[in-house]
Length: 280
Image 1: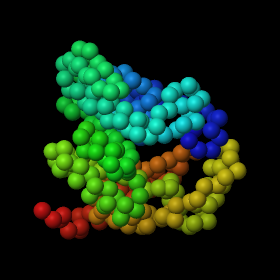
Image 2: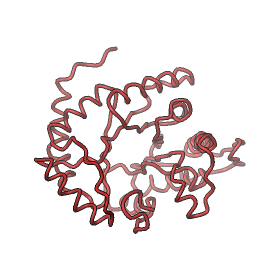
Image 3: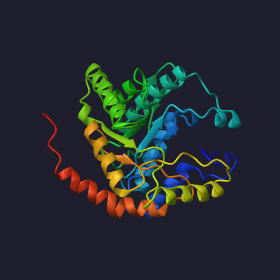
Image 4: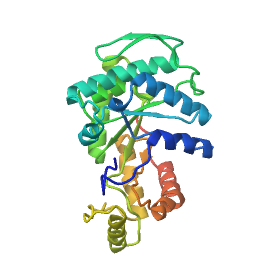
């Protein structure tokens, strides 16, 4: 169900779209941000992402989360466990998905899942198909990230990102993982709308609310110019982020997308060239 606007409105199924986009594109990496672990058995999900990797010739990313949308679970009759149980199930799922993608056969006996001599064939085209785990929980989620993830996705101020990464490094030390193996990604929230003036941003949101069939006009991000966005990306980079995901909802803001590609990205890349090298 849609996450904003009219929650009874239409929405297409993510994995079907990924397969279609994979067949129509040649360079973009494709994945979800993120697939709730409760919606599919992790062995089924492993086979799905391996198939997507073949459709895309090695461009698939598996985004995985513990799931949070209680109303959607209730609507479909999907069990919605306690937060602790959902996190524990995600941890087991990440472990068995990693093994299914990498090993010929997998037997697994956990508290929540069990596999017996299970296969996932054909194996992905990528030597190590990346797992992206989203979430900022410091005791459990980030420990799962340290164990199994290739990408971590979080959001917040530069100070929040720096703190979460310090926690992640501590978990990596505990489990014997090199934190350099995990790429930190972040979004700039709420949704960025780039225009010359705040008035134009407000006008866009009012029109967007009509399309979303809602009377509520969400709070606009105060970062609304190219220069301001470049400055914020630099702050997040200095905090440790090494990639950025821009969050768009329908109606898709093509003008902002164009500006991000044509102006923000090259200006940010140029600014990085003058950044001092990180210590060590």
